[in-house]
Image (tube, rainbow, N blue to C red; front, top):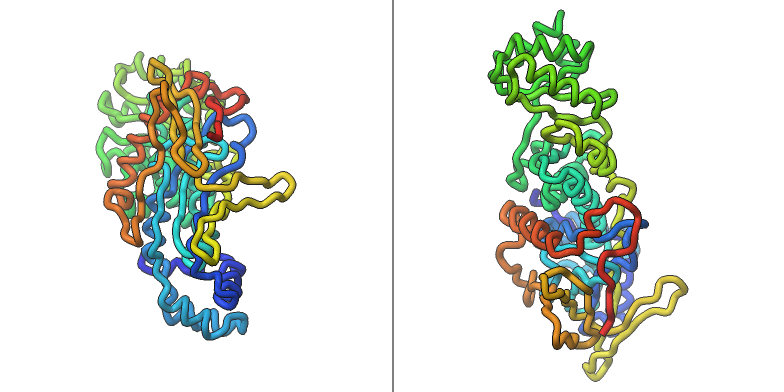
Length: 434
């Protein structure tokens, strides 16, 4: 995609710029931070995702003729504002948690340092990407943890908006999903894609046998046959008869999956198909996957609950001004005092501390400077993403997805064992302001 991302925003971002240009404050240096005040109820950790998509979008955040003509037609924006926007390029610096990193309440997952006008216009776009993708990745991580090494596959495209489906597939990959059914996600981000047939393909033919033969002829015996359109036992026997011992997999998409998986496994083994895998789908979430842990299932296809965040469709991140320069150029920490929405003034410098076994103990946020972690093993969490307007390499494209998946696996392995529990609980490590 090459179209501008500049209008994927709210009007008040631009009206603030217009008023700030008039007051003379638009070019004051400011620092904005992106963080979540809390995790969704019962969640033990969150997962940072969407950073690569965001950085790609920021390269297209330009107000061209079409965008400026539209803004002019609203009658809201004056010539000075339109002139400023016509030359807009983000020239500031962005630091952030590496994509795939786990985060906790108040973790400053992104920090934007720029003039007020440059940073202000980005708020809505930044939050729309990070809130969606981090919510999906956080849910996907719980699913891959519950799967305990068995592959999870994204099959949720038809359960969400078409562009969200692509983003969800990418976010799921960050959290360890091994493939997606979405071809556009595969094209854009280098993800493995898969898919064979739905119930409609079986119903299209005069018999299930005819449908199975057509699929095996088209894709070979290693294909996956959907065996619950009619009678499962009959279908499994028919699949083995047609494809033979090289039958790749059978998929179960309805009924009591635990019970079915057990007797289908026994049936396959009795027919000599000991290598034929069993794939299950049908409204799975992390809890359903956990219930299938004792069943002879080889992989999981996850749809609706993945692309809707499994009950938490947003990460509830906010984008807040924490420091700005005064007229003399002196940095001034700032915060609002709204009830229930208080923040912490000053620039945060996050580190994670570890015990002698390398297990995370706390998220320590130094306010206004690096925190004192003397006597503890610690890891700094911020990495440079954009420096003086220049994108640092390695944070976009398919490379970024692979790197983020690795970072997530490493970050998750550092957390206390309680992070793997699906029961409700507090964040597995505390956030400490230092």
